[in-house]
Length: 105
Image (cartoon, rainbow, N blue to C red):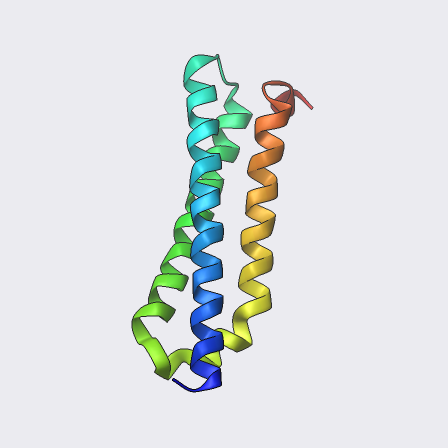
């Protein structure tokens, strides 16, 4: 395995780890909404976050499936995908910490 392929694999593993963390946050947010009376704004934000998560997961899966032939593309897109995943994780964390008040602001 050459250095580019190894680095690409490392990036994909990093993205998959971030997706797993996002899934955990989404599960916590969904449970919190099921227990309480979540306001429509919070439910909408969670739905939109789930849609963005699904699109990002498809991108990561596509790059993984293409394997070594996508190594250069993985490295080129590394920063952008990481930033999108980080922003989504932060949004979900904010949704959890703000609770029902988040949609009232």
